[in-house]
Image 1 (tube, one colour):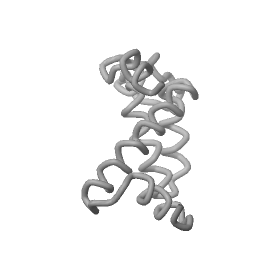
Image 2 (cartoon, helix red, strand yellow):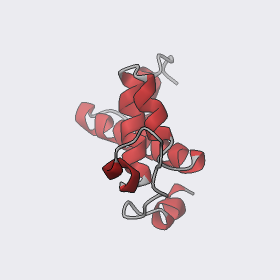
Image 3 (cartoon, one colour):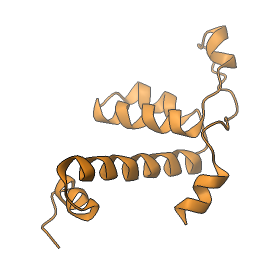
Length: 101
């Protein structure tokens, strides 16, 4: 399922520009793709920065952000699994504090 979505939503596609009253002229014309939004949103969440989370979540639709966060999670778990020489399932369960399956 994700492979089909991945082919449809390539990183070069962009979302509608964000236009907020307080934004600078450059920020008003800046376009973000769903992976930029996901990376910024997840990093802001890890830093507990609500302002950055709100900003990143406005860059793309909620569905696109959800897909991007999911893709980021898959890539992170895969990278950690390779680094640790463990299965992705074991890494994911460990990160979530779940017992071994």
